[in-house]
Amino acid sequence: MKIIKKIKFKISADGSSASGKTTASKLIAKKFKMRFLSSGILYRFCALKTIENNNKYNAKLIKKIVKSITLKKLDNKKLYNPEVTRLSSIIAKKPFVRNALKSFQKNFIKKSSLVVVEGRDIGTKIMPNADLKLFFTCSTKEKAKRRLKEFKSLDQKISLNQVEKALILRDKEDTERKISPLIKAKNAVLVDTTKLSLKQMEAKLINLVKNSIKKKYGNLQRSKLTSHKTV
Image (cartoon, rainbow, N blue to C red; front, side, top):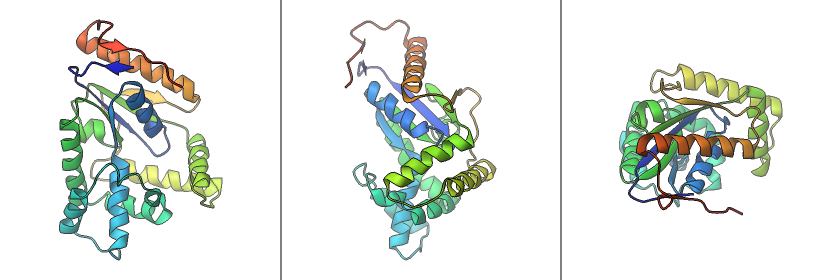
């Protein structure tokens, strides 16, 4: 589905780890030809560069790292290493890190007419005026199964129990941190992916986006919103 260029539509997608927000955001971006950005991958990038700098970092270095970010550089398997994962959750608590990446995200959004950004504080802090706010949730057991599959695809050996414990700890940290905690925006649409198949989630999201666009712009002409078959 392609939206006419003159239309401006911005979507925020928040949720806990492995709740389905990244998969959902990529689906939306592909179906509606939108630009996509994952805020989590930005923190991972900063963490990776910090590790390469002997685990030393300060406000000056983080600003330099953020200025070097490109979408191409964010496509790197090293960003999912356990050490990067651990450090990214630590530096995400630092105000100067969040502020530097907040500027990057806001600039990315400003330059995009059609965009979907996923993270944990997008609808509350980064893009509070998003046209559509989504908040993803999922049972811990289901999240652990999904994350375990991701680890296996990266050839990382870890048990389901270990993954579940790590997710519970990460969720606790995200919801209880003082700076930009993970909370559902008042006007966000709750999407529980626990029992949804990929096709069911896709259908639900397409319906939500189309209805939201209709609410903002009224009935779009056929030339403004066209369907394309996907393989």
